[in-house]
Image 1: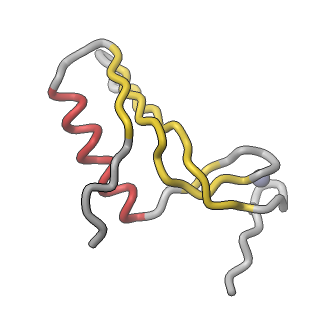
Image 2 (image 1 turned 90 degrees about the vertical axis):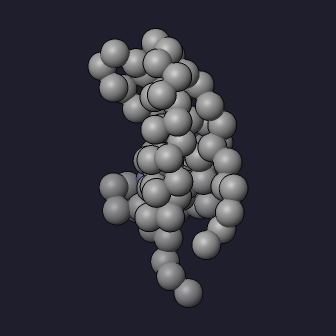
Length: 80
Ligand SMILES: [Zn+2]
């Protein structure tokens, strides 16, 4: 069992989802429902490597739409 203690405030980290925002300067991409580990006390969030890789694809697709603000939902299409 791993201890899920927040290194910032010693609160408990729980599996949850977060809204991930990427500011590209010319456009802002908001990815909702991104799986993450979130501290229940201070709200700091951590994203796993696999989620991070998926996030890069989601952001790349959103970026291609060239909108000022693009809000998308994170979706795990396939779990490797
Ligand atoms: Zn915390």
